[in-house]
Image (cartoon, rainbow, N blue to C red; front, side, top):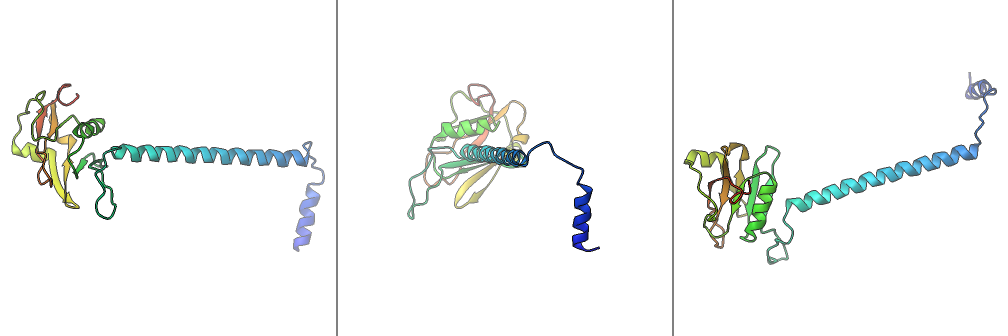
Length: 189
């Protein structure tokens, strides 16, 4: 059987089939469906774009930029990144806006008290903790010459929050950390 024979056989099998809908109507409906699918895809892409923009905005505090370095590079004064394993990385590049850092940590579910004066807030009471507990809650390293605190919220005992109180100095060489008793006045919870 040749291709022409096959085409003729298929065409003959459909000779008794008739459509009550005009070809123009079928074509216009197909175009309308394609437009709707494209519009839905575009709306989905816009929603994903908005979600990505919101996530990027949430990762870095707006308006907390340090002055331009030689070469025009702008870096955030501090960044907070929640890792997939539940730890929270805090990179301090400049001691600015402790209230903003505190809000960001609390938004990540961490009861926190933050000052950039080396002093514990007067509304806070120290939580009795030994060095081993502090090392379970806090670890750290350097990244790009800046201290990075790694906070392990799962290691916090019940009723405790974190205190971050580095002295106002430049360059940032050490960060005072500790545990405080969680309370609405001190840690927001």
